[in-house]
Image (cartoon, rainbow over all chains, first blue to last red; front, side):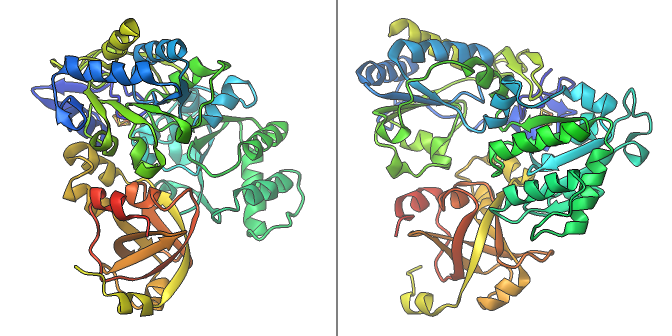
Length: 368
Length: 128
Ligand code: SF4
């Protein structure tokens, strides 16, 4: 079975006698629990048909609709969602896809997680903390396992480095740890680029440490940067760093995507024209598997809100229409794209009466 | 608890930059008990502060602090960090931190007598 608890999409998870085996803390909680919500219109519980009718009513009157999220839905739902957006000229907003865009545009070199396991000798965790977000990354691919060219594993064959705003849990297993000052990410990159060119950097950071880091990166046979997608570093600085690194070394980048299927929606939306409606101007906001109000104050949403989600969220409490759905890969089957671009089939883990978000989007598409 | 305004105004302030971080136990609590649960709130509505900064504002580990940034006011529990990071506060990613703005956020932190607001209350009164 496959766990959709994060974008690693671990394929070795088992459910046996009601117990989830081999999943991490996040995966186990994700598979076993659901904060179920009722279908609602105007915050009153209704049946599913009425909730879907309520959503249709809002969508059919919308002049400036915006769809948000999509990263926590199976690929099939995303495809239907895009068709629905095209039909009513809605803008689709996903978040944290900057590095994926650069990969899709071939601006930065990337690799698969299997490549990391087999070949990576220098692994950099840049503004990310997989021990807390993608817990099995280190044990399955990035650090601990032996690989084709890394038979001695982490003890001898791999060097892990953390570059972050804080001393994270992941930092505690790394040989080198570099702290970035908040807001000074680009300065760190500039200093590092100087170091890569054997120049003593003009910087407020520790020059010796920067030169040591540059030396380690230059010696990499197969380097990989796991980049936090919420990282505050400007995208152009990341591209510049990757270009410079690949002049003197061999480096790949992998985005630590927050949604389990963010890579898929980013690829599907790549190069597609979008109506570009601003969230604040939207008269209808459809949240698909995404808790918008977790990050945006409620008073900044001026339109009607529709929420399609397997769980009770902050947004569902404020939404005009709530449509509960099955959770992708748990109680409905489908497919998804792992954080490194590998397609994965998601079988259903447990029986459920819940309707998939793909089926809900289909109903909306057909009725519009 | 009513806001004891004089005391709040008189409380010494410390300027900090706020940075968010992910916490596996908080993510697990969200999945197990939901975002409106006490378990999730206890692991979310916190800020990790440098021991020197705690002293500056006259509080100890576990006390309540008010964080202010551009008109937004959030009350959370202060925790003392084991490592030194003067001038920087670390908050788990959640609505209690996100409401302060886009990271890194400049803010002031001071002692507070207020209770930590639940999510509904936080969203309704966050703009002071
Ligand atoms: S690492 Fe991610 S995909 Fe793997 S078991 Fe944990 S949550 Fe699930």
